[in-house]
Picture 1 (cartoon, rainbow, N blue to C red):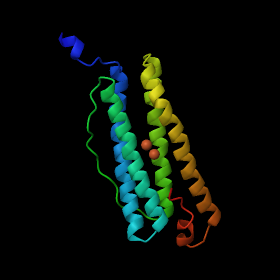
Picture 2 (cartoon, rainbow, N blue to C red; picture 1 turned 60 degrees about the vertical axis):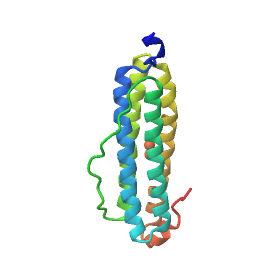
Picture 3 (tube, rainbow, N blue to C red; picture 1 turned 45 degrees about the vertical axis):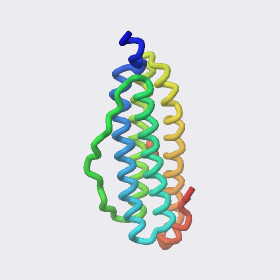
Length: 168
Ligand SMILES: [Fe+2]
Ligand SMILES: [Fe+2]
């Protein structure tokens, strides 16, 4: 009874492929946030450093959440190779701008997965992806608020801006 012990593949192949790309994207985001954390750490931007170390952990957790889902639904999760990570940044402001850009790309990619799940009638994946849709709204909002605050504070010393970066 080979078929009975074999785990049934419930995930649609198209969705699985997109989710594997999403895993790679989340892991790359994690690596990028780690580079940003290091940049802030070296310059004693204490709150920003904590913010980006936390982000790095969160993105890894996102990647793992998808990784486990793919295998749970009988698919094959792929451990991604991480392409070149940029470690050079101009300023704290530029780092937050780059972070928002990165999050927007992740959101677009989540929407792609969500659409594929819906179009292929893969309801389990669609429900699973709802959490990510909500999460992206929050992540983009956090970064937009930080950038708004940076704009408002204008010429204030960056250390004072750093003091207002959320660390939770
Ligand atoms: Fe993420
Ligand atoms: Fe994120």
